[in-house]
Amino acid sequence: MRIDILTVLPDLLVSPFSHSILKRAKEKGVAEIYVHNIRDFATNKHKSVDDYAFGGGAGMVMMIEPIVLCMEHLQSQRKYDEIIYMSPDGELLDQKMANSLSMLKNVIILCGHYKGIDERIRRHFITREISIGNYVLSGGELAAAVFVDTVIRLLPGVLNDETSALSDSFQDDLIAPPVYTRPADFRGLKVPDLLISGNTPEIEKWKHEQSVERTKKRRPGMFKE
Image 1 (cartoon, rainbow, N blue to C red):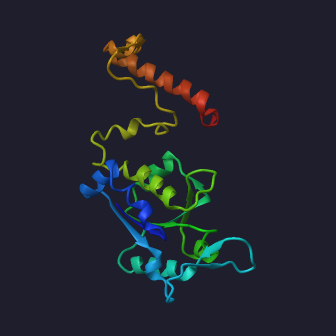
Image 2: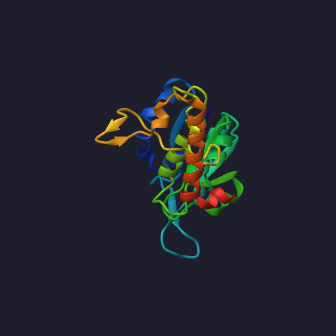
Image 3: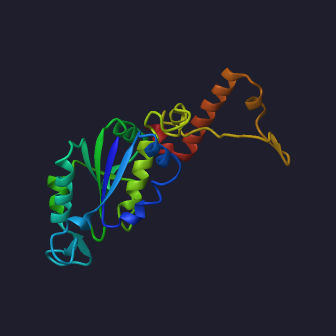
């Protein structure tokens, strides 16, 4: 899977993609992640990427020209399945969406900044808008990092144990059950006896019951759905 990220602050995305699972995915050749500075496609001498909004109002707006030029440069080299804009009013990212998007081959992600992007970009060039929550960030870079992490970890070969992702929270519309590890007794705080009994059928039954109870308590709306 190849992901091209368009941003005015590329340095913000250096660390998230240089460690842990995402670093491993790149080293294995399972995922390619490229960050492009939109300012490199600005056409005036000041390399401007934003300007005042027509009609007035506070805040600057990202200009259409450098963004479209950057997109067209990438599209001249390959076909993209989706051009995604990280936006607080987009579709809310969930596990089902991540599962679906992990099947794509080439994706462009546009990170907004300032007061947002010229509406013509959203109407004529973006194919999908995605939000990571009902709140506003200073820019789309952190949202893009969350999105990439969520999707890339699902690709075959990324996790050491590929069954691990299948047992994550929300994969079966339930929150994951509690987990424990050694020591079995820490200062009198003990692991449930069942988990160290070796009775696999009963353990699996217990895990499912715990998932159901946690979902009822912590995500009642999701459980009703």
